[in-house]
Image (cartoon, rainbow, N blue to C red; front, side):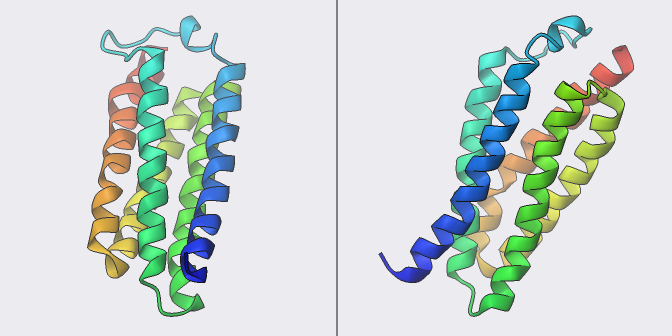
Length: 158
């Protein structure tokens, strides 16, 4: 493996793994919370969230690495890594807001910021790799579903 590939994998995988682990911990510590809420009738089973998020996180990682491999210098890398970092932070914060703080309305406002940051990430990655942008499409679709079909109805119903 060449140095750029190893570096790209490491600077992508480590923060991604930390975010996934932190979000999982916050969620698992508060698994009782969804049971206290009125949920839409189509609310997915708990196991489905783990499956979808695993796939989404893998796609985020692959997309980011592919985009980073196409960069020519540190400035181009930074143009990818900054929105990458922002969306990871917002991704974790949503879990904390909805599960630990138990605030569906604040979580809804925050997930809109997350969606905007994902779109920003898609735009930035597309400049380096069209495939990278396509790999991020399931992420924005899942977050849009989570925002408007799950988070918003939960906020309204509770």
